[in-house]
Each structure stands twice: as C-alpha cells, then as structure tokens.
Length: 460
Image 1: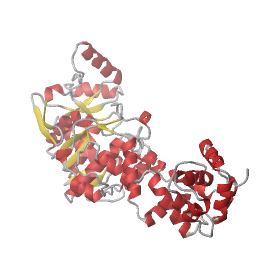
Image 2: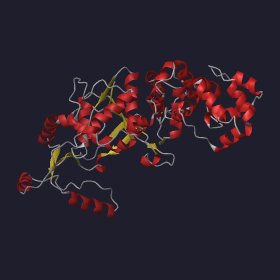
Image 3: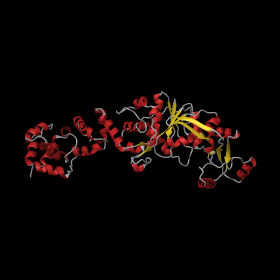
Image 4: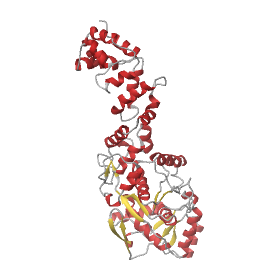
C-alpha cells in the first residue's frame, strides 16, 4: 500500500490538511506501506517557497514522517512538481499525438461569457467545445496572431465513469456531463487535474484519502489515467472540517493552523488525538500514540457527516497529555518558565502542585510569578480574607515557619483548621483564594519568603 499527502505550498498547513495527512499516514503504517510527501507547486503565482519548509516542519512536529519526499529521494522522484515539467511534457505530447487533447485559444472573457449564458439558460456550466474541432490551419492562424493557448483533454462521449469510493461507496458519473477540461495552462504549466493524477499513477500510489470537495474531480482524473493506460488509485473522500457553527473552519473560529496551535503551546500528541477522532469513529477513549492510532485506524469508520472541530476538545486532549507526563517529562516541559536558581526539591514541589491545574505551559507562568516572584498582586476577596483573619493568626504562623515550611506545624501554631486555617493562609501566600494544592506550593517557596508574606498581615 502506498499513500501520499500532496499539499500546495500557498499557505500554512491548516487543520483540514493536517487531518488528511494524518489519515494517509495512518493508513500506510497500518498496512506497513509507504507514505509519500509530494509538493504540488506547479502554480508559480501561488507558490510561497518559505511555505515548503513550513509544511515540512509542521508535518515533522506532528510525527508524520514520510518515506519519500523532496528531502528523502525514492524511486519515483522528483517529489516537487515544479521539477517534473519535462516528464509532463512527454505525456502532453502523447495525448496530442493521439488526438486525446487539443489546443484551446478561448480567452478568460470568452469562457466567462459562455459560462454565464449556460447558467442563464438553466444548464450546468461546462466547456462548449469551441476549439475542439479546429482544423490545423485554423490553429496555425491563431498561433500566428499571438493568441495564447491551453491544452484541453478531449472527454469521450456516452461513457459512464463508475468507481467505489472508500468513504462514500459506489459512484457513477456520465462523461456527457463533463466538459473538456484544461490539463496544461496557457503558461505551459501542468494543471491540477493532470499533474495530480499522473503523479499518483507514476509514483505507484494505491490509496488516496482527500477532502470530499475533490469527489467531483475523480471522474475527470480516472478518464485521464484510462486514456494513458495508467492505474488509478483507490480514492476516499473524507468529510470536511467545520466549526461549532457548522460553517467551514476558518480564522474566525480561532487558531486553525498547525503552527498557530504549536506556538500556543499545544502538544502534537494532543492535536493528533483530536484529529484522529474528527470524522473517524473509534471506541478507544484513551490517549493514543501514533502506532496505536495506526492499528485502530479503519476505513469503515470514516464518516460522511461534517466533522466539528472544537477547541474545548483539543484542550481535553492537551490536559490528558499533561496528566500522562512523567516527572522528567514534566520538568522538561515546564523548564522554560522556571527560575534558574531553584533547587531540585523546589522545582519538583512546584511541578507537582501546578501540573493538575494547567493545560498549557503558559498557564503555569502565573503561579511561577506568584510563588517565586518578589511582588505579589492580591485579588480583592483574598486581601479581605487575609485581613479578616487577624494579625495574631499570621504572627503565630510566621513564628512557626521552619527551614522547611510545614502545614501541620502552622496549623498547630495557629490553633485553626479547615477553611478558617487554609483560606487566609492561601490568601496571604498567593494573593488568591483558589488554585493548586497549598502543601506543594508551600514546599516550593523559601522559608524566608513564606515568613515575609505572613508577617505582612501580622500587624494592624
């Protein structure tokens, strides 16, 4: 089995394409096959060179390692379409010589007028065949006039194009409903219908999962490959990703790019676990590794209904990832926000305190500033609670602070327990009435800082 991911480097990798890449990767790994990365950059006007590197960075961060690609040569390269022009030209010439393709001199304006006329007449827009039967002399005359021309595939009439879609099941299209389509643009570059299908065949791709918006492209591509005597892969068209309002996912739904989410602090494992469950059902509710996802991936579980992306669900998987971290992994994750002078026991105590309460590493920054910072900002309810506890309470607590501050000793010294003990103590030490468990927070603080914060309320 050979699958592929073939992005166009015209923008950042968004979640819909990331899910497509994940599904193709999992399908290949499930069957011990090959996963190919192909960069579809024939459209020079839309290609952004820096996006090629960005796409590769995003895929690598997700863990979707490819077996063949621009940086990993295989037997069917090159893997950038901009480097395959000579190969495409051979097949263009073959189609022309066999009268399976022909030059089209229609301008954009002419095509637009014809399209409008068809729509006004209640007919679906398709190429009218204006240039289909031009004689050799008529074509030569147009070339002599300096008119630009594209190359169109001659769609055969009276055929039924039937295939089994891996998601949507049996499909049937009539060739008479498909107009002759462009396979080479007037600038000489290969059009999507042509290069995408041809490369799949020449790279021996056997299975392609892609967005359902490509379903209508499949009959054209199958006709083209059949004309060339090349095998077509099995296509599966997965549901589109939508926001919680049912509209196609876009920037107004928040961060929808892989890079955006990575820079926001989400783990790749969390994102992969959510994408795995968007449009693909599974009875497994626990956090899964990529190999576990590959084992559980099932084409029969791909759903036809739109898949809803929900940031709250991503935060759920991020939280599950955080709670699954080992002590060493948690230290590495939170190390960028910890003060460098902390002792091992202080950092371990702090991590133990905040880990159950944070989703992103940045969430812990507030508590790092509260516990280890010099200045302490008080929320009004906390300030009021501390003052109401009285100076005697804090004087007794401050006098009981030892080299290693201990809650039991403070409780004994103040003679209070329950909320009457914990709430004013938390308020004085953190400036808040709620947060991580107090015992490990206290263990993370130096005795000098604990004593100083308690003494602040020990005088009237």
